[in-house]
Length: 125
Image (cartoon, rainbow, N blue to C red; front, side, top):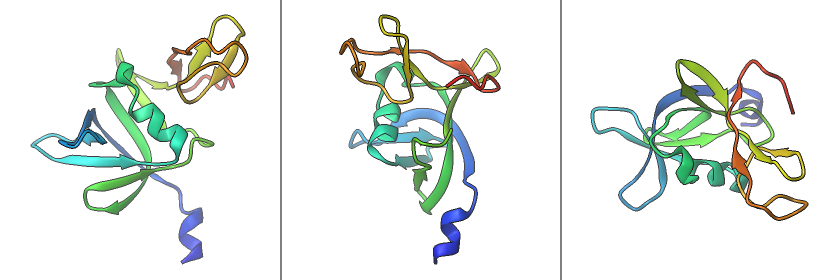
């Protein structure tokens, strides 16, 4: 149904983990794992080892009781909680001053970008 494409995503929160077959997942506690899926840049974020074990929030939709599709990378849909504050996950090249929302080499100099958590209320782009 086309109307569901415009429905706002719901947030889920847990510990960023992996399924037994090494797929990204949220550990919701009490042994419940929810596998995380999304577009390629989104999957790169949830596979980033620097975020493993973090208090993680994803916004999207359940596709089954144990599978969750995160909204596309083009919308703010992934956050971590650090020191009680909600942080947007971003990546920064300190050579070229370029910010991205998925890990990988800088578009300009090819240096691997640094994880740079930003206050979620800070609207820097």
